[in-house]
Amino acid sequence: MNTIDQPREASWAESFPAPDASPPAETVLRADNIVKKFGPITALNDVSLHLDRGEVLGILGDNGAGKSTLMKILTGYQPQTTGKLTIHGQETALTSVDHARSLGIECVYQDLALANSLSVYHNIFLNREILYPVTRLLNNRAMKKQAQKCLDDIGVYIPSIEAEVGALSGGQRQAIAIARAVHSNARILLLDEPLAAMGAREASLIIDLIMRLKNDTGMSIVMIMHNYAQTLDIADRIVLMQRGKITYQNHAHATSVPELMEIVQREYRRF
Image (cartoon, rainbow, N blue to C red; front, side, top):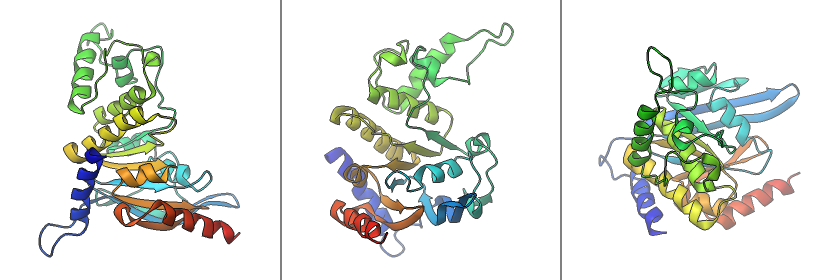
């Protein structure tokens, strides 16, 4: 756990600076009083949160808590009913996924959206292929070179960028999906259950990648998670959602799994 604990300590120090020791953190994404209704159903109820530059924010909650709805709003897939989003200091009404991407917001969904029969480098350039200017044929040489550099830059080892993605492990596939998002010049990265159904070794690969992105590039990351213990190990701050509301948020180091479980149980006992 040392590789994870050391970066987290630095984050805690930044969260509680000595007077005049450092400038305040730069907030890159803020959601204020977000409400989302589907007819008579309220999926999100007065949700407010923020994400700072170089921060990992873990959003926890069971199925139906509103996590996926919130992610769709933050990525421009759906508009909120009321409330506002502020991105890089500007109040913004996201109109589409492409609009969000133009602002540096990328999402890696749980299904990864990879083409199993295509190579690693073709997946990294999926729908953004490099073409020769006249013939409009694929410039595979350029894509291979750039894909390898992209993987090297974020410290991801894949035996061959020509390998079919379907033949790779779950951890390697997740890393490729993240690399594709990073290659798209993402500044805010949303990860939907990035450690789902992974063994300890594969999960360690992705955890290391997340920490490198945070510490080496200043990437701001939101993780949608179910596993409390894993989230507390990785995140700087956590948000707990239940029934479309935020019922708890705090710094990860000031939170414990038993505390989160007690909050969840207490909320369920109210219904």
